[in-house]
Length: 84
Ligand SMILES: [Ca+2]
Ligand SMILES: [Ca+2]
Image (cartoon, rainbow, N blue to C red):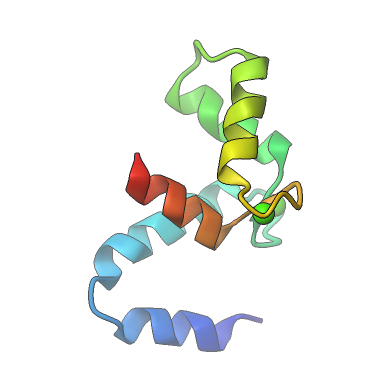
C-alpha cells in the first residue's frame, strides 16, 4: 500500500517540504484513501479560512482537481500548494 512511493519520496532532495505537505494531506484525508473529496476539502478549508462560502470552496476544489475526477490526489494538492 504505497510503501514504495513513500520510500522513494524520502530519499529525494527537498523532501522535508514534501513530507510536510504529505502530513497535511494525510491529516485532511479523514478516510485515508489518498484522495481528498469535496467534503474533506471543505473541512480543511473551513479551518484555514472560515469566511469562505460553499460556492467559493466548490470553485476552489474544481481548480485544484485538475484532472476533474472529483477528488484531489496528493499530486494535485502539492501542485496547488506550491503555487499558493
Ligand atoms: Ca479521502
Ligand atoms: Ca483529481
